[in-house]
Image (cartoon, rainbow, N blue to C red):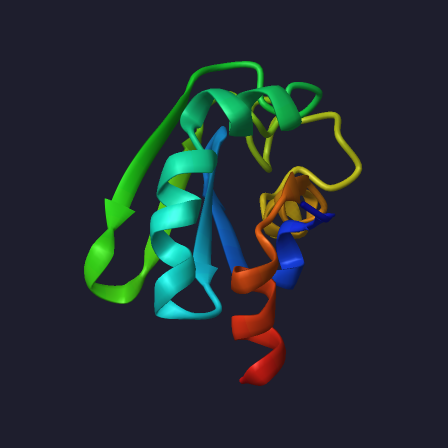
Length: 115
């Protein structure tokens, strides 16, 4: 199985509130969503984002739109008004997660290449 960036099979969007960011991952094809549900667990996301997210990661499934939403607690250095980070907002967190590499079956990769 080829190892590819999550970006190849999903879109992402992120935002922030206080010291928490959230990342939405949306399958590029409906048949990819079950694969994402299986492989993209809160634990896997926490490990990938461990240098950013100091708290827990919660995952919410949105099957009706083929998406997963991850809430990353304690990920903004206290939040925009108190953080010493250069960019204390979560707008780039989706891109960071989309840079995760996953082994993806060829048949799923063909789905996104065909669309």
